[in-house]
Length: 116
Picture (cartoon, one colour):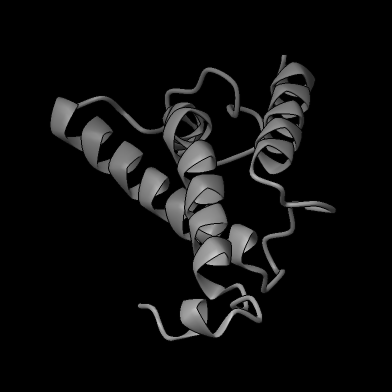
């Protein structure tokens, strides 16, 4: 099941990257490109949201569904994965696309250069 989750996430990355014209995107938490930066920040927020939610609900974070054998506090990672795929991933690529649209060089038309 763990490998199916990884395959689905890779497919979602590929789909989102193609949809937002992020050609050649590779997920690398150490990379400095905009898309990976947004994903890193969003993932940290997802982990915090998951941990806080579990704590407020009184659910032990060690209770695990998928990450049980690989990580301490595994339920946090399980819950965060739901948020990451559903919210963080699409928003990261959308914001990356918007940032790229805003930072493109203006065309040679002088009328467009002076517009804000």
